[in-house]
Length: 272
Image 1: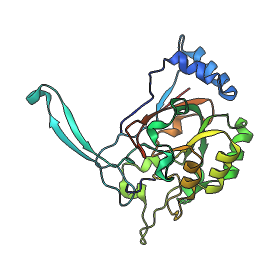
Image 2: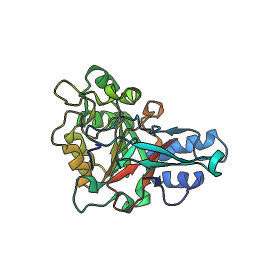
Image 3: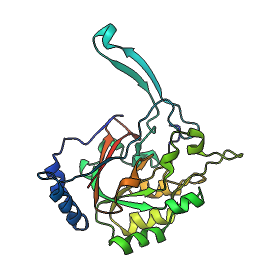
Image 4: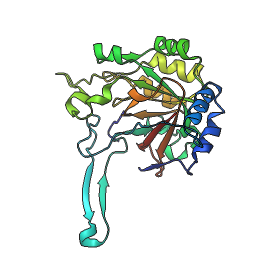
């Protein structure tokens, strides 16, 4: 959720072989990653999906948030090198919500351990529900249905909602989807599902392909409070989850690392 209130990294570059060794720590994911390794000799994975939108001054933002500004500073032709000046809300584009975003005194983004930014990726597909109802939510039943098909959520997993809403990102009005009362309508995690994931499963965080971890019409942001209050992080405005398998992938989060970060733009990759 991008309430009015960056650049990222995973602290040290990890080789593909190192990513594979980390995947072995999650038994439910190890077999799938091993098969992927066999597909491309010498590599731990054969597929990469960029789950990150290109951000620009036209990117949809949470109502009330400042729109990104991008000003040309110098050019190669005139100055010998090229760069821009950026002004943006921390919660712009594909970005992280750190625990401190909703919980006073909680960890800020730059303090999160790098080990939590690489995780088995669980994709919960609720597109059919979202197509029928923009207020669709991930429920405990969706989590349990995923587990019946794929086994228990692996320890240390990151759980992402795929609703298909990312297809609307080129149309800010449709993406934010305000009604006549200025209430937003788009999918998110129901607080009961969030409670299940943080209390009964060992996850590092959750993510959505919409503007908010909570569904758009939420008034109490209880999913945010539940997840961030448990010391987990959130990712919002994820892209391209349609092409990622429901289980067997790893996620790599290039999280923000500026001081006192409530969150910030992130580069997010899925590997399998």
